[in-house]
Amino acid sequence: MKLLLVTQIVDRDDAILGFFHRWIEEFSKHVESIEVICLKEGKHNLPSNVRVHSLGKEQTTIIYDSGLLKRIGYSVRFLYLIWKLRKNYDTVLVHMNPEYVILGGLFWKSWKKSIGLWYTHKSVDLKLRVAELFVDVIFTASKESFRLPSKKLQVMGHGIDTEFFAPDEKVSRGNHLLSVGRLMPTKRHDLAIRVAKDAGVALRIAGEGVERERLTALARELGVQVTFLGGLTQLGLRDEYRIATKLIHRSETGSLDKVVLEAAACGCLVDSTDPAINGLPLSPSYIREHHSLQSLIPRIIEAYVA
View (tube, helix red, strand yellow):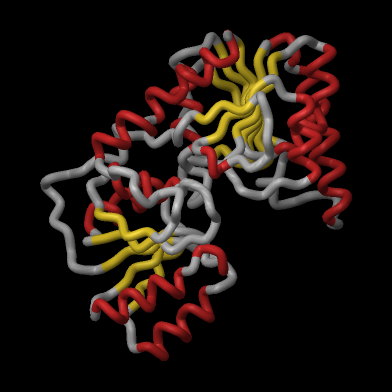
């Protein structure tokens, strides 16, 4: 298989999408070659059979300033790249951005490429509905993670790097709580602060976003010791999972949240109110068996062949 991966960011240090660097590495073990098209390129150290092509968002000097012109520029370069590279791939996987399927779908169909989409979000909009018409297969993590009825859907579990996110017996746990996710209303870090207040312990929050000021004010009002860690690399996040006494998860996104599985893979206890998570036997062994990256990638590849 010669694979084209389309994603937002290739940067191992990115606080949100740094994990995808490991996905690319794992894919590279199972295919002949990979072409990666990303919106933004950062730090990476990928195998020799992987080539990365950026649409240019990382550039500090751009000849056009308006948002519309930028999007047009990215779209034109995207179409140029999928055409230029068309003989270098026979299979396409778009990660989380159905708009790329819409842009490239007709071309990929005419070139007889197999098209897949990985999507884990409860939102169902027009872009997703149109993209569903073009793709051959849709991959998602859980039944709650994809809300558009489709015969093309395959529920695969999350791809947690269980060789990386794993317990470390040499590391001692503290007595503080941890909350992880972007600082936005749906993540409900405010409820995690209230849990810390009731428990009489400190809270550490990993993530960045628009709610920082409001959450800081709430912590001050309730008298809770809260440490805002900002956006963390994968290494920094793993360290936090290993030293926290418990992950407090109050997100209202309604799908199986990756951070819960990462924490459980590191042996961290999880306190969650998410119906998609309640009842799961969360443990390092469960994550390895049902959600490991090492088993997910071969299953994705097999789905194309089938």
